[in-house]
Amino acid sequence: MYSREWNHRFINLVPVKDQRPTITREALQLALKNKKIKVRDRVFVATLASTGLRLGEMLAVKIGSDPTDQESCWDVEAQVIRIRKSVWRGKLQAPKTSSAVHDIDISEPVNDMLQKFADGRKPGVFLFATKTGQPLSPKYIRTYILEPLQIPGAHSLRRLSACVISPRSRLQRVHSQGMARPQRR
Image 1 (tube, rainbow, N blue to C red):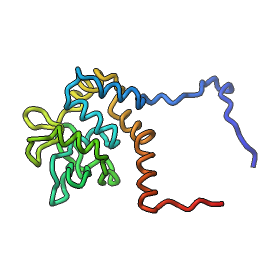
Image 2: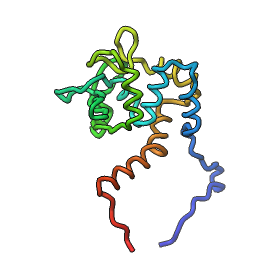
Image 3: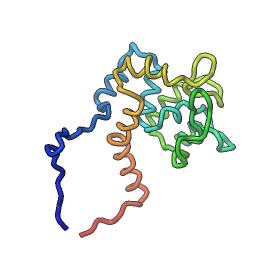
Image 4: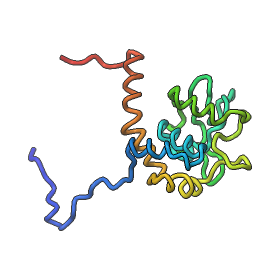
């Protein structure tokens, strides 16, 4: 067949660049070192960036394991965050997609950071909550956590995780479990 190339001058359109806001690993590290920001907020951002969770999924995470496997929880012993629910407008509901129900292995440094942050709190409470025990609101997160850290949005941390942080750890996990495809010669 004949190859085709789009001619933008034909209809006077400018090629669109990737306009999705994102954050670099270096900018994230600078934000997380900012001691003027609350510890809770820094832990929230670091966990969101390292896991790639959607905002509502992160807000639904509770402390401790769930024997019924019906709630989203952080299991400190297994070093895993289990996603089973999401928060939408302050209420727990099913996640956005069926593939969002999954378990995420978290690194030892992130697990240790979460352990220090959650020290003394009861199992079954939301990991990131208000003083009344309700999940933080997305508006609060945007206004008082992300904007002061100059993070363009929660989804930019998800993209950072997908593009920068997770591929390397996924590749290491695949190789360590012997699931890598043999290279062709």
